[in-house]
Image 1 (cartoon, rainbow, N blue to C red):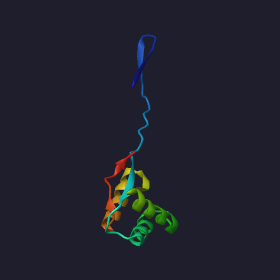
Image 2: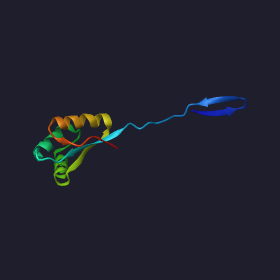
Image 3: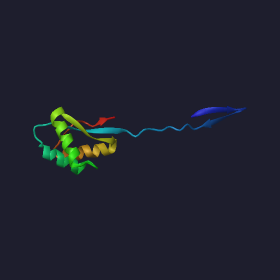
Image 4: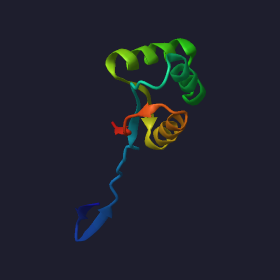
Amino acid sequence: MSVTKTGASAVLEKQKQTARYPEASVIVLDDNVNTYEHVVKSLVKIIPGMNEERAWELAKKVDTEGSAEVWCGPLEQAELYHQQLRTEGLTMAPIQRT
């Protein structure tokens, strides 16, 4: 709040604060357990808007680079997708707040 003085009286003015909703990244890690096909199937099943072509690209990135960000957005959704992918057996990095 800020104080504005007008003559002999003081008026309190409410300052508007905009808080950004926390965002996070969902990252799949490489392992020696899951096949490309299983990673692709899981990503298409869990991540909204994920198509097979993009899922294959991400699966290859996981294999060649050791990890890939498969989704980024609001924290609550990230937690849900992270849990669902882990339930599918994928190896997951801890959720990364952005």
